[in-house]
Image 1: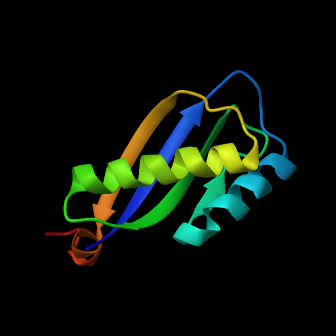
Image 2 (image 1 turned 60 degrees about the vertical axis):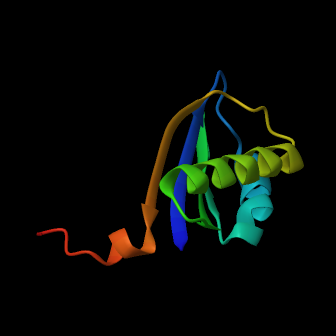
Image 3 (image 1 turned 30 degrees about the vertical axis):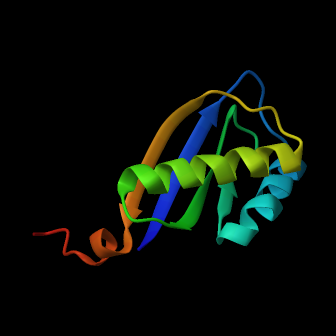
Length: 95
């Protein structure tokens, strides 16, 4: 099953446009997008294959850490993680 996992970190200094572009390039292989230009928070949303939410989060964290290393960014503490399966995305939010 495909999962969309968002991971956000927070650190001491704002990231430049160039740094976030490097992160975006590094997460592109996972159909990822990156955020955080000019902010002390940066993050990514990644698409991973997994059989459970916990497995999806673990896979996305591993990919995120790899991408951060590839981009040459400091690995700040992770402050937020969210995951939604493609099944959850298709559910009617009105119930």
